[in-house]
Image (tube, rainbow, N blue to C red; front, side, top):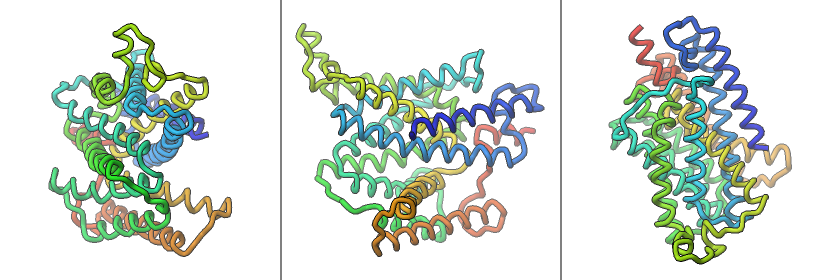
Length: 375
């Protein structure tokens, strides 16, 4: 269901961007993204669609990956990540073909994208790794800690400060989500180490997903087009080093064990689960860059927590899930944090200075801001 929903969302996105491309008055730029230099209501419409795509694909890929790891016992997270990366690279190549021209490729030196490629590899590998070795409760708690980690790392890496009000809103949201969603928190030293690495590298990747677009004046698809091949090669190197690949058995002339990547008995159900996980993984990568490009890293995290709140609230309202005082208080706190954060950002955009600290963000994708400034 998640896969079909996201494919439908992507079809709508493709239709909208193609329609705006045909309507664009800019004769010098045929790329679909040039159509975003249109009235803000069209940009806002795409921003909402990016958020919907990301929320749906991020939810679906967790479920699909959990099925791959637990139901079909395919315990090779790096190999799964490598498949995701290859699929993303191929998808971007197809979108860049002249007959499709979904975006105009931009040649970026590998020396300027390799750090982003490594961060992407770490982000997906550690995410799947944490999901594989930790309980769902502790995995969820680790995800919640990404938002405050983003605030800290933005300050130390780029000197970006958030106002006290924004910090309060994020803290209120994180505590509320933790209270409402985290119950079974069992963890080992090994699991904690993996989760800690996951939090740090996820925050770093999300920050760079936005800052690299500004630094290189490149769109989300242009960046994905350039760095995913580097990430894929990195994956191929990591697989035999960190997972039982079975290459040793093959080179010695023996049949690989069923507990290795090459010897794993793939059933039709397992292949379908990997396929769904791969398609959703591509959509997660694409929608993450698109959404961060038109908002911010912190807003991206807040939107992700909104997904958790809506799922929990929907379970109570639609399916009669148990609503104890802890969950109820958590939902109220989380929604209060989301509403307060949204109010502060709206105040910033309108020039009211309600949030303070940060420069108001433009609704235009970062790859297009320089173009509008030149005009």
